[in-house]
Length: 193
Image 1: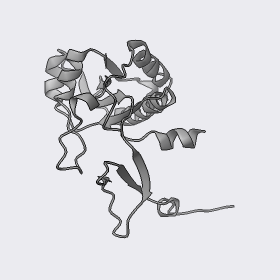
Image 2: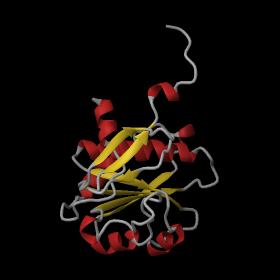
Image 3: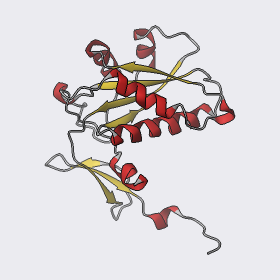
Image 4: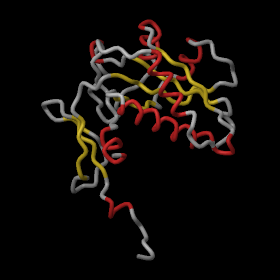
C-alpha cells in the first residue's frame, strides 16, 4: 500500500484548476505532517496556506516550473494549482531544519495523493517576492512551496535510458516521463542474509 502511494506521488505540474481544494483539506495535510519526526524536536517549520485566487496568482508568479523542460513556461491558467502550502523555516541558521523540510513535505504530498490530489515541491522560486507579499518577519525564511491540485497530466516512471540521463521529458502527446535508477544501482553494499 505505501509503495503504491509513493509511486502515485509524482511531481505533477498540470492541474484541473476548476477542482477546488478547501482550506480544511490543507489544514488536514499540515495536521498529519506535524506528527513527523523533527531533528532535536525543534519543530522549526511554519506554514502559509492559500486557496485564495489572488494569493495563488501572486504565489504562481514567484515559481519556476520544470527546469529540464526549457521550452515550457509553466502551466496555463486552466492548469494552475488550486492551492498552495508555503513552508517557512524559523531556524534558518540550523542545518538540520532541511531534514524536517523534506520529511514534512513528502508526508503532505503523500497525504494529498491519498485524498485524490497531487502536487509538486517547488524550490526554484523568488523567495524575497513571496516574503514581501505575505509581509513575513525577517526570521522567517521561505523554504519550499507545495503546489496542489487535481492532476491533469500523465506522469510515468521509466528506467534510466542507456546514456543514464536523469532528465525528465515529455513526448509529443504530452506524457511526462521520469527516469528512475534501478534498485540494484542504489544498493552499494549488502551484508547478511
